[in-house]
Length: 221
Image (cartoon, rainbow, N blue to C red):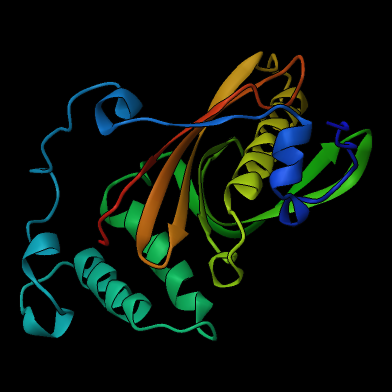
């Protein structure tokens, strides 16, 4: 089989061909192996998150819980012309689950430069990401905009994770911190209101993927 030519492409232009060209493999894992432990308790979450079908039926909700349920309702009824509803829901998810800890902020529409094949003019844009105050990106959430045309979202997941790794090392270098030899980028791809979780290990020496593991969460939130 003829080899696939590697060329400089921005994150949004990656397809299955790029995964083949860079020998990138995506492997599925069950929840226990993916998270490294048995599924834990969710007692630390507001029980109203799982008790109400619609925010209008609840009278004693915290602000965060109300917004999450409201965004969930809007996202569940959104159409292709209202992609912002999915973005709003994606942003509320780390807020209500406590991922936005002190020392971090949630950023939306965050642009990340992407260097590939010697070309530094590529770019990616996260829908939502958790950013440490030192500007390192700790978690990426992206709405899958490829579902309607039948494309595979995973190539863009991989490309954006590589761009995130490059971004983090660039920020570390600017702050006079040693760059990382490797980093596993946590990534959540939203297909409507259904998340798919990825762990994307990237190495400094090659700045490209050795493998990707993911878990498909087959239940809508």
